[in-house]
Length: 465
Image (cartoon, rainbow, N blue to C red; front, side):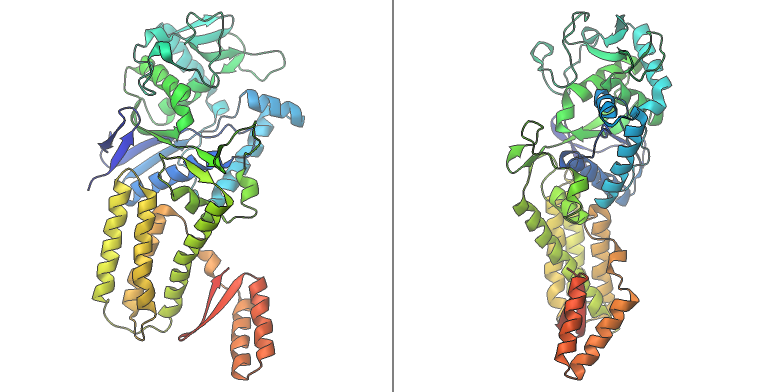
């Protein structure tokens, strides 16, 4: 089955055909770095990380760009509050972004361009639009002339007259039409600014991504992604700018993830129910948050709650316990052939996993394939005789699926230090000597260090709590 992607532009699932065989150019709108990312930001970061991983797993060379908006009204306000410069605010929260997304198991994008590092390209892009009569200057600001682009509204599937304006689309008497949007904003006194043909100022929000996509990926790309809230006005405006200037289709596939609600309520400043990832990672492991995010289809809304987190934690523990048991059993496994029944189970899980991922990156059903393998592996582990090649085959398949999903803790977490190893040996000796008090004391000490011991027919097995 070939990969199919739901395209917001056409509202249908389409077979994926890249612009260049074997290569994928993908751009996802990143955060405005004036604060920590919240769980709503985390969803596209995690999901498109999985998209990138899966594309690579099936043989594509992926160039993945995710930008930072590092100059904006919010950054200017934050800088004033903190008594520092806008670049200092941006540098701080870019660093926090990297720390927090690493905690979520997210790999850095191929490129992380920043607006302030691409000002010349942005100004050049706007100049090109002015020259082609797609843009006009008014009082130091530059606006895009939407009437000049008859397809404006094709992504959000709204008529021009009926569009409901979202964030950063302002009513302004200087506009030729209310639908026109800003490309360049004249600087207010004391604001950070750059020199341009229209005076001191800074770019509007939408133009940033168009200019950076053109510079780093080219005039046309394969996949453009982001949250559902970006469909209009942000992505709609990107299309108008880019296609107006280049005459080329900006992106072949537009992908948008659904919202994350909190306790069945929309996350908003007015409700004060925003949850930032930096704080969340202090109490919830990143892999649990990641599992939660992938447990629902990316296009559907997702409800964050304590109950949902605990369900994710419990489900993930089932997978991790199976892997721990496989590794433990491998120590006493016999040489021999791969068990035919287990080989068939591995093949079935692999086919199911690929089939679901090929169906518009259906991660919840792909996770179901992982559990099918868990259900097959657990009875085999408890047999009196097992073969090492069979266990290795099972482990290899789990690893292959996790290379895409990224829901398991890093392998380094499974390494015991010498002190803990010695304690386990000492406890074993204490039990042999019927020194139950010392054995219990060691177990309690290991529990405090997050190590849970399980006595099995094959010996002591441990796992992280």
